[in-house]
Length: 218
Image 1 (cartoon, rainbow, N blue to C red):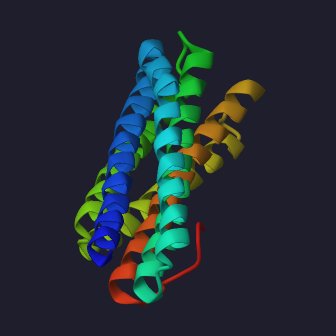
Image 2 (image 1 turned 180 degrees about the vertical axis):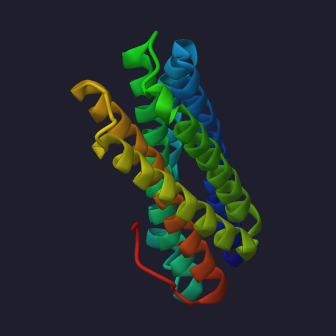
């Protein structure tokens, strides 16, 4: 029975890795669609999102089954409970990638961001993809250096997010009300995507060290 239980815990991790890899694909395609006004790529992200939702739901069912049938305690229980929370955050990251893609589709053939903000959003997109890649590798390897790297990249995304707000509030901003709402939402989506990654990284670090460094999403 113990071997079955350990196999189930390994399956939980494997499923988290699988979902995280799909999130990498989703945010890569979504940010490319956003920055290049690629409607076919945007529609692909939107169409693929239900797969992430389904995998996350299946993982939740597995975790609940493990708790009900195996009655884990101590660290094993923390692993299962943390997996439920990580699954929810990964699912949300997939949703955010979908939201970014939807913005690109809604404004096609125009780009969502004004020319003055194209560089900012290109960089935010690049950093979101980097965060997703590091997170997937962290879940797979538990290399805790990656958790610190994710936090550092998130700090840079926060700075870019703030710069978007400063831009739309400046006297030189000439965007329409629709354009202002679009870029504000888009910036928020990019920032929240990275925040969820930080939240998951904290949970992985906690499982590895037993030390908690903060609470939830910021």
